Length: 232
Image 1 (cartoon, rainbow, N blue to C red):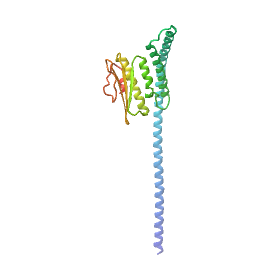
Image 2 (tube, rainbow, N blue to C red):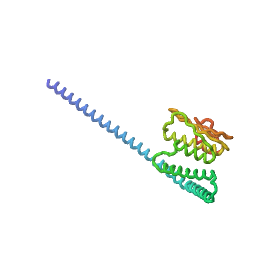
Image 3 (cartoon, rainbow, N blue to C red):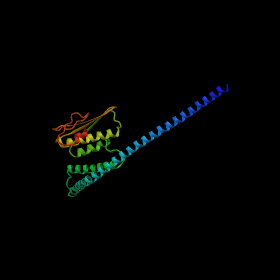
Image 4 (cartoon, rainbow, N blue to C red):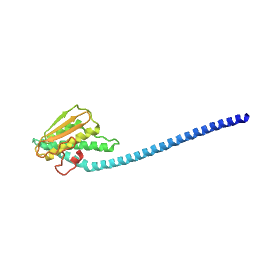
C-alpha cells in the first residue's frame, strides 16, 4: 500500500516537474521569438534609415545643382527685366505687355525655385503649388497675351495634396503649350469635380490643338520636349 502511494506521489511529482519544464521551455521559446522579431524590426528600421539617408543626400545634391545652375540665371532675367521696365517708365514710355509678362514670370520662377529648393532640403515631401494658385496662373497667361477662361463644375472640394499639385502642373503645362504652339489663340480650362475624381480639360481655338486632358487621351506633342510626358 505504501509502495503504491509512493509511486503515485512520485508520478504526480514527475508530472509537476514536467509541466514546469514545459512552461519554462515555452516561456524561453516566447522570449526567443520576441528577440528575433525585435532584431528583424531593428534591421528593417536600419534599412529604412539608410534609404532615407541616401535619398536625403541625393535631394541635397539635386538642390545644390539647381541652386548653382538656375538661381543665378533667373536672377539675371529678373534684374534685366526690372531695369528695362524702370527705364521705360522713366522715359515716359508705355511698358510692353510682353516685358511685364517676362518680369512676372521671372519673379514667379524665382519663387517656385525657392519653394522647390526648400522642399528638397527638407525631410518631408511637399509642394506649395495647387489649384489655389490657378487665378495667378491665368493672370500671368493673360498678361502674356493668351486669354484664358476657367469653368468649374461639380461640387468643388479639397483634394489630396498630390492630386492638387498634379492638376495645377497639368494646367500650367497645357497653357504653356498653347502659348508656344497654338498661335493667336484663346484657351479654356474646365475642371469637373466628382465624388471620386477630378477631370481636367484644357482646350484652345488655335491652329494646332496641343492640350486636352481628362484621362490623358488626345495628347500629342507639337514638338520635342518633355512637357506632355510629364503631364501623362
